[in-house]
Amino acid sequence: MSARAAAAIALAGFWWTATGAAARGAAAQEAHGGQVLIEALGCAACHSGVPGGEAIREVAPPFGDGAAPMAPAYVFHYMADPQTVRPDIAPARMPRYELDERQRVALALFVSNDREMRGVDQALRAAMARHPDADRAEGAALFETLNCAGCHVHPEAQSRVTAPDLSLTGVRVRPEWLTGYLANPVTIRPAGPVPGEGGQMPDFRLDAAEAASIADYLLELEGPDGADPPAEVADWEPQALSPFAMQKAGTLLRNRWSCLGCHQLGEDGGRIGPRLDGVAQRLRPGYVRAIMQDPAHLAPGTIMPASLEQPDRLDLIASFLLGRDGEWSGSETVADLPALPDATAPGAELYAARCAPCHGVGGAGDGFNAPFLPVTPTVHADSAAMALRPDDTLYDGIHAGGWILGKSHRMPAFGASLNDGEKRALVAYIRALCRCEGPAWSRDGRRSR
Ligand code: HEC
Ligand code: HEC
Ligand code: HEC
Ligand code: HEC
Image 1 (cartoon, rainbow, N blue to C red):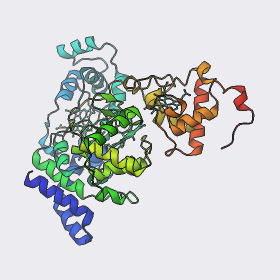
Image 2: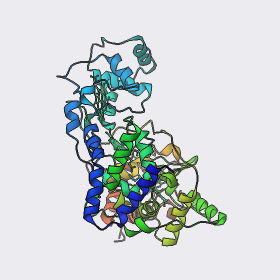
Image 3: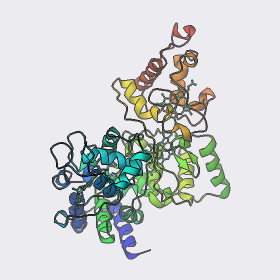
Image 4: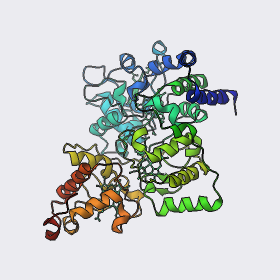
């Protein structure tokens, strides 16, 4: 281990044990260079929990009507390999996104704002021929989900701060992983920080010194009020599992619990949450244990339900994940995300966030995660099938998970994460999707909960 990594670990340990505010202040001072960089680079354009955010909008060029038009071909090539061309705004720079050709075509059409398509070169013309339906509207949607608008003012785009709260970095991740990630980011959440909305951590091509100084600063941050992690984040240590216990945990994960409805492990599983491969290299052991116990506390608003209540189960599964090899360093993302749903009713909003990733926005069983499941998620829009289900049955499935109805265990149990009113609102929303009611017998003298 390098001296730098060892120092970073020592620093992270210190974060948990130090009681002297003065000592913390001194360490924060040392990390000052990191803060200057974070503000100049515009991390707060996407992330909460770090300072800055507006400064970058003063230096990144504005786009759209009123701004200087650009040749579409220039944007198309620049997006593949953005180079910092203006030393006068350094260290600010354009970060590199992982984009395919179609996405670069769509962005070129939107960003250049050259509706007559004058600056089109041969390469762009050929790419447009390969993606004839990539259009300006698709570029506009990408511009929002990738949060280009966090840095570039555009009259037709809104900025969105949805990326993880960076003040929790020291709680979440291993210091020795962080510096490498900053220098060379990989995909953690394949469908974006809000599953289904997309979004990427772009690559700022930080040099080693920049990455180290930003990492030092992030590891020193204190989380928002009330977000203090439970004590076990600091103290919990994984157990050494016997080969038998490892096998048991793997079987439970694959065949009993809903975890792989949302998470990928090896070749199996969904794409809603982070891959569970590589957790050992990336996360602090206590964080793995704590997020399984109370996901909403450490990742507010997350779709992940608290589903394992028994402490021995939590210990087993966390130890299993932390005891596996299988480092993951890829950049695979979900390509076909649906348009952001436009939800207003309380049930509709909940459904769009928590259910649509599998069941589809319109309840057709075609969410972006459906192809990664062993069975088709129930088609809630199917009025004939849903008319056979009493409301209470739907409620029970939402509360206790698919297995209770003899359905797939990859349907998660939301019982501990949604309140009674929310579960009822979801049942009502399923009724709206199927335009149907439950069987007559079930509607007379309804059970009251
Ligand atoms: C973190 C801030 C940030 C984000 C996010 C960002 N950019 Fe930039 N971008 C910049 C800065 C700063 C520059 C100026 C770089 C320079 O000229 O050296 C720039 C330059 C550009 C340029 C070249 C403009 C010119 O006049 O040469 C294009 C095109 C561009 N960005 C498009 C995008 C698109 C499309 C996205 C989203 C996919 C995006 N940017 C996201 C900061 C950002
Ligand atoms: C254009 C938006 C954007 C900008 C600008 C941005 N990030 Fe991110 N960042 C993201 C997204 C989205 C994720 C989640 C990626 C994932 O889960 O795969 C992320 C993830 C991260 C993570 C991992 C968080 C975790 O615990 O999972 C760190 C650390 C991070 N960013 C640091 C930074 C720093 C430092 C900067 C400024 C140099 C920065 N980011 C700028 C969008 C951005
Ligand atoms: C309904 C989908 C869903 C289910 C079911 C689910 N998770 Fe999650 N999980 C998520 C999402 C989304 C996140 C990312 C939270 C965030 O933004 O940091 C997550 C985060 C995690 C993390 C932290 C990973 C990281 O890189 O930050 C672990 C570990 C984890 N889940 C384990 C589990 C286990 C074990 C189960 C089964 C008991 C499970 N999850 C069930 C969606 C789910
Ligand atoms: C990780 C993917 C996933 C998520 C997220 C998910 N479901 Fe499911 N759901 C499934 C699968 C798979 C099935 C079972 C299909 C089968 O076995 O035929 C199912 C079945 C159901 C059933 C049983 C239907 C019946 O046949 O009676 C209900 C009710 C249901 N889901 C509601 C919801 C609601 C409401 C949400 C959001 C709070 C949700 N689901 C989120 C995957 C998911």
